[in-house]
View 1 (cartoon, rainbow, N blue to C red):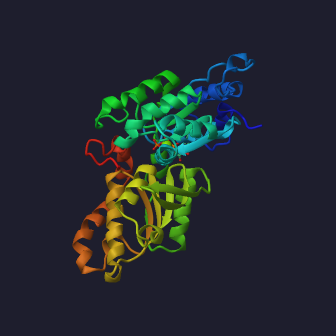
View 2: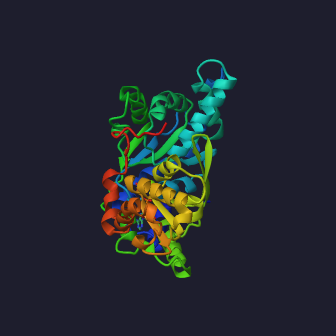
View 3: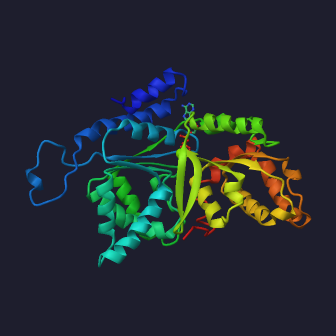
Length: 379
Ligand SMILES: Nc1ncnc2c1ncn2[C@@H]1O[C@H](COP(=O)(O)OP(=O)(O)OP(=O)(O)O)[C@@H](O)[C@H]1O
Ligand SMILES: [Mg+2]
């Protein structure tokens, strides 16, 4: 049997894979408690004879909402929890992915059922998972904000248990968002059904793992590729990761390799295929770190590709995403097309800044909730 979360954390610390951190221990204790309560929670379909069913707990255990600054280990702890519970059916997803799926289910329910689609959508979600783990719960999209309260009212009423990580407290979700008063019922539901804990670790472990290390490697040879592999291993704790598919306004965006909020692409997959701002924005909202293999020299035959690359770097930069890359040349020597050269100056400057320790360190202050005040919420 898999060990409970606290035991797993302690084992990793003993094995030297993680450093001992009292703040992480405190959150692991809460997750541990929940993991121990879950086997006693036997959700039953409601029905006329529900009151006759005995022996199991009548109401679900409270979920847990873990918030804190970037790089504190929230995702690491939630994954530890998720992998340790045998409770089924369970589902772990990035919150963005979950919401994209919800919008799809709403569209289907509207076509197939008369009236309010929300109970139908909630029922279909509950039939597939009774424990929902969300990584990076953040709300920037008005369409999401407007449905969350009604959706979770049905989900919680069905006895679903939710664990979530976020960079915001519940009270500051969708802060300054349009029509925020219509979002407040969701915050109230979180407070009723979930315990809220701050992961108060003093250390940004991700920053420590990257600090002082080169993030940009040229030329893009085998040595550079090995350096990117080493960064990947360092940041994911040696997970191989797996391919993911993101839904971008009904289209599928394939991410060849992803784990722990990090995505890895070849330059070709990012800039030599027809992707645009919405795709890059989606990546920037989904991953805190993007690894890009093999940025080539950008000559006049690659003008369209250069335009995409400029767009990609702008989007990653504006959203404070960490970039780790291998390239044919230093940033200032990448662009060989006089027509693009002027615009590319900004890209050079951003690439230089993005490889600096200061850029990596600056992420925490502004990453969460980006875009609301500026009105760039998707949708
Ligand atoms: N106690 C620890 N000792 C060593 N490394 C750690 C520890 N806790 C977390 N890490 C590592 O630090 C990195 C950041 O952790 P994680 O991704 O869980 O942070 P996070 O709080 O989810 O950050 P974000 O808010 O940006 O999503 C990961 O590579 C993780 O493996
Ligand atoms: Mg995280």
